[in-house]
Image (tube, rainbow, N blue to C red; front, side):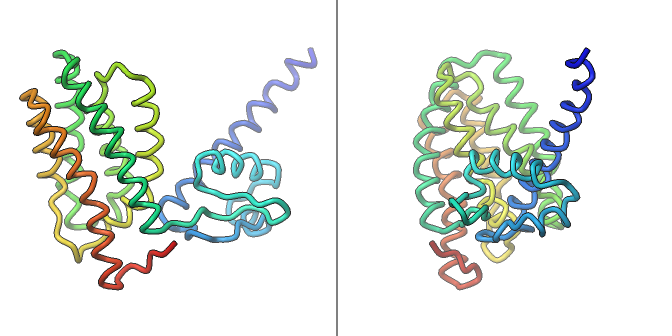
Length: 236
């Protein structure tokens, strides 16, 4: 009887934590909560309308995702970003994703090809809208971009490569969003994706892996150009 009585309350509490986690995470990724921001509970309660215990659990999850830092007796803070950090992320992601793509092309079957084509089609629909208003499209683009890159490596038999790719892809998201909304450095993301797709479907492993590596590196190049022009004050 006691377990049944507590059940709905437990579910409600978990739902509150999940909602707080998703909302805070989104605000960090979009920059609404800027890197380095002190996450004081008073401010968070007023902003999100939930209690301290809910916030603490949500923030602890975000610490596990490296989007929030926690210091003993100093509370929580939005994790900082820097061009040096993104360079490290980019190099590591390139190593993991290119190898996962290589294996995926070797082992991929007709179902893999169909999933890849479908993911590219969905991505293309949002990429058509990017030039006009990238700020309004960034959530949908990020979701479909993630699905496309996941589809590229879907046939890779190594669960650890795919697991590490998911972590690195997520960690790069804040930087990708910055590069996506910039209009000063020319870039045709759709053409980059299409070239990788065509090489993968042609089973040209070397070309697909080279193009994918260049595609991953291009975001870093964009941010480096912005930093060099002082349009983006990214520092460690």
